[in-house]
Image (cartoon, rainbow, N blue to C red; front, side):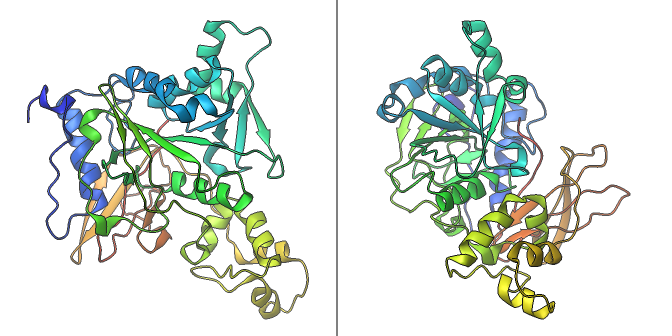
Length: 362
């Protein structure tokens, strides 16, 4: 495929038996690097690629009826979505972004300065502006989001999406569903380069994966007509104790769900009541949750990944200044130390080949 073809068609990804999400990520990343299809930051590996033409793709959001109709838009902080954030601010929409790595909440609202000029709005739309002009919103803020825009590494015309492997977009949507901030009518959009629109085998798609309704590229708008349901709840059985520590707001949501009588048993831990009983301490669910968790430091941007295929393990990734990498395989969230003196974490690839890379996409 030549550089002209990639503007119209996605990268050819082999879908023979054994193809994994990691295979697709790696193929797209490699192709974009080889053909110089991305802007800074480079290389694109372990990132949501900041593809060339991202502002043209983002501008197509204005053509969507869902954008015109909504008053609140939630947009991920990835660099290629800067144009979408700017469009939302220029249209005087309420612009919401995820709380960084979901550590202290669910949403931040971007509040431009009074009398903001176009230059001010552009600054607010950048990653630096997202940090400078963010105001945290509590879980009980009563926000309802009609439109969600996410970054992707790859996406299919059927609406199946692959991120960089950390699972934050999937988790964020499930958490929003838990709080009533989104529902089945919420429209999900992604912006990608045309070469990132690929075939994704149906067997790789899981119930907790976020699906998209529209794909915006520099050359076209694709309506996926995806009928596969989006996440409607947090699947607690796919979450382990360490993730509860990394994303403290999950503790609050889990306690709420427990009080409603729902099963919140973790992948590696009993439910709240049973945990309290086994610890010999009745009462406060948050206290028993605290006892279940262990301390884990913040994730770094350096990533090192190890992918298991058919019983063999191969290391891939990039060296960094001692970060930690988290990823999600088909069986939930997991970590595994990687040798070599660093503090990276590996993503185990289960039998079906699901796994992924990591790193910050901002």
